[in-house]
Image (cartoon, rainbow, N blue to C red; front, side, top):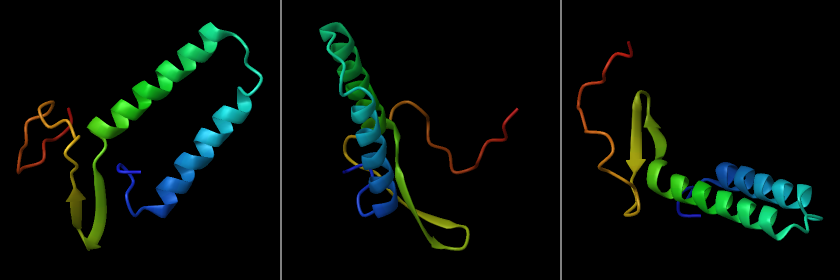
Length: 86
């Protein structure tokens, strides 16, 4: 919920995807497979919490970013000027 705070569309999409995956695997009985799926779910949660930043369009060409305390900030140096992709 923190990653998509106040974003009903993103929260609904995430909820639908989670429900879809649970329903798809509801008859799984292999303990090993269940552990693997739970491991994957935890990894996805970590990636979302540490790497996704929420932004809101507030004006034309202006986005308000909402960083969280859990956001991983040391992976890419900040730059005021955008870099061209090569």
